[in-house]
Structure formats: C-alpha cells, structure tokens
Image (cartoon, rainbow, N blue to C red; front, top):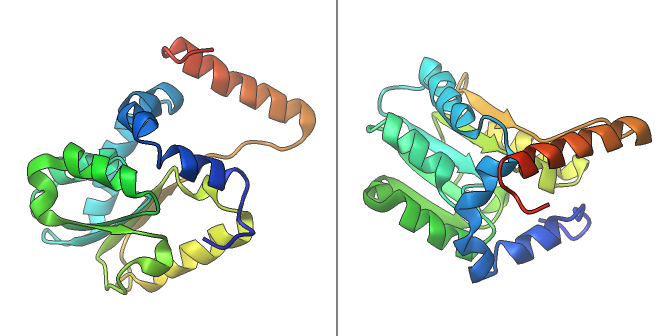
Length: 185
C-alpha cells in the first residue's frame, strides 16, 4: 500500500500485527459488523450464481480467515488465494481454516502481490475502507483485471455520510451496536 493511503490504515496494520490483538480478533468482527455471518453466506450465494462448481477464488483482505472458512465450508470444490498485509493475521487464518488449508494459498501483501489469475470469482469484504479513495479505485481495478470475463466480484465497504451532523449520528449508531454486542464502551 502506498504511503499516502493512510486514513488509519497504518494503525490497523500495526494492530493486526500484534499477536495479543490478533488472538482476540475473532471476537471483534461480529461485535462491530451487523449480520457478518449473513454477509459471508450471501457472498457465497452470489459468487456461486456465476462461478463454476470448481472455481478459483481471490479473497482480498483474508486475514483472520473468517470469510475464507465460510466460503470453504459452503463450497468444497473451490480453491482460494487469500491476500492480506498482516502476517500475524494470516497465521490466524491458517488456524481458523484448519483442514481447508489444503485448498487455500495465503499471500502476505496487497493486491499487487496477488497472483495474476485468472480467477473465477473474487471478494473484498470490509477491507476497502482501510484505503484512501484513489487506492480503493485502483485496488478494485486490479481485482477486476485478475478475473475471467463475467466473473462475479462481491465487495462490502464500510462507509457513512461525512457531513458533521450525519457523521456523528452514524458513528454513534456504530458504537451503540458494538456496545450492545458486548464490546467495551
């Protein structure tokens, strides 16, 4: 990731490199993302609409392995390449995936470190918000470049209004959901 794509990305990369924080990672996403399990299930459904029965799937932002595990559980004939910049998160993904690791290649890095493909499908869930807008656009173009023509791509991106009054309301809602889900206020 280029140096100018900060927006907190360096903070999160540092956190995702901390073994203690990574050990607690699996608790976090469900507390902060409403419907995370449903997002993973629906992603598999949407990809399966167009991907072949035996597919090669690119997963950008694969650290932790939650998304990979959900997709591997649902689609036993798919093979995956998971890309993430945090080595510690990729080690967690290996543990999370367990017996599925025989169908998964994990790559430490960003989209430019991903194999060229072609891929039959791709995902980028809850990752793009770590990148500055120009880098988001470039990343999505690079994902599409690696796909076979007509291949499905599912992205989920955290965004909210940026006008001060609305921004505060949305951030308050986000915090309230997390606290209601057991996060420390």
